[in-house]
Image (cartoon, rainbow, N blue to C red):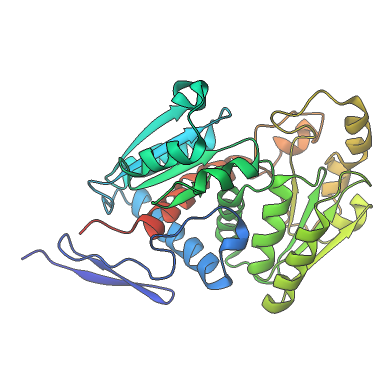
Length: 335
């Protein structure tokens, strides 16, 4: 009989036994389309599970909990980190992943998104998607009967933000009370950082110019979540105010994927470039973060991006572990 042992993981107990593995309750069988789909306990469970899976990989400990399961991936836009994190993660968990670019599907001949989702749901155990428009993801959900995971829309990038929380937890030993300063465009990454950071009890400060601030309805929702978790979400137009005593300073490209060339936008965002001077106003232990890809000398000085406070490649590496945690908790281990 195979030996087994238990690993306490927050409120969940994992049973390490080939014949009996327990899925964490709550997320099993669910889709994650935005950060609003997750409560505080679920965010904590994802971070804790990702930390545990990271340890398993670092110890070269096999963890094929999704053996026999298949993830379908449907992407409208290019991807380096998200696609590989899903695909490599699924295979490290013992499963299989199949990738489909939107131009490779019958969508190009007029097949509807719900029909496509219904067909894919009969082939796979879960679907990871990347759509340019969030409304297309909602439409796709009309035909899906398996968990659907949002790999990016123009409105949210939830698993990216959760990977960022994992990175901060790894660096600081916890999340509650940390100050995260986000500088630049109030885009999908900003939305997800506000919501996930709020759920974790962090203090998120967003510095953006007028006209490029995050969606007011999502700011209001993030503030409500933060109030319940003991954190806060605030907006400012002053990047210096935002980074003062910050534990982490975060930025993104000034023109997101699929957006047209916009010199006026670049000019408005130029004062929010992360410089060595701005980083000096953060805590001495403060770190620089970027979701990548980046344009050095546009949204961040190369001296910061490649300097000693930068943890951008740790951040990218942790995407793998968070994607694996999301896959494991939503698809559930094989029986």
